[in-house]
Length: 75
Image 1 (tube, rainbow, N blue to C red):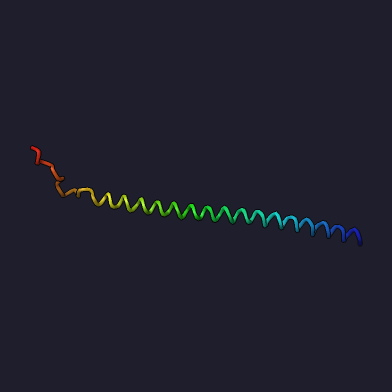
Image 2: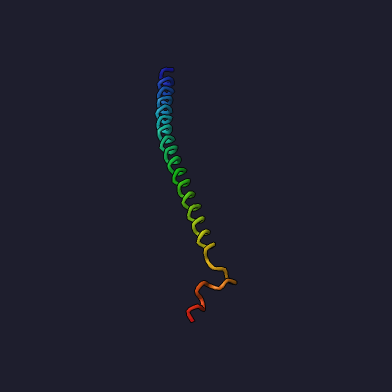
């Protein structure tokens, strides 16, 4: 009976140790996830900002049916 209790005690200690390791690992994963989410949000903001700037530049381009300004005036 004593040997069984010692075995169970060692298993409980091993489980407690493993739980602590997993809690530490989980904390690192949570921190890494938070950093990745923050970086993703920043990158999405930059992509949208760039998309808006490109759209504004495209709007400034002359249309295909419009003559370019200054074209033919120098002739």
